[in-house]
Image (tube, rainbow, N blue to C red; front, side, top):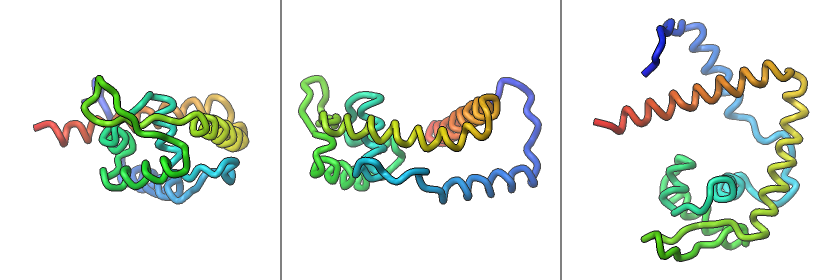
Length: 153
């Protein structure tokens, strides 16, 4: 629901965007893991460290994964000692939170990933990276709005 007049995107621009999204989607992190966190454990830890404990359903929604997938990933992270499930009297479902080693691994890995990203973005400059971050935020908001509109009758 744009609040300003928006010019329709041309087919050429849409094709260019799709091409760049495909290129981005096939990329992996810029550095090898400095911890032994895999991508799924890192994403789970991102949610629970940065945004607090979550239910399995909340993790599935936050990561846009099927409940069965997040269940397997959480169990693997529990087995590795990164997260734990616990009862909260204020929640009908068990919650997932980071363990101390999980939070430490997340912070170390996050810093290493940021350092790797910095090596790339520093070649672009502050203005270009700020524009990119703002554009991606608007793009993500538009995706969330479209999903919400589809779910709302």
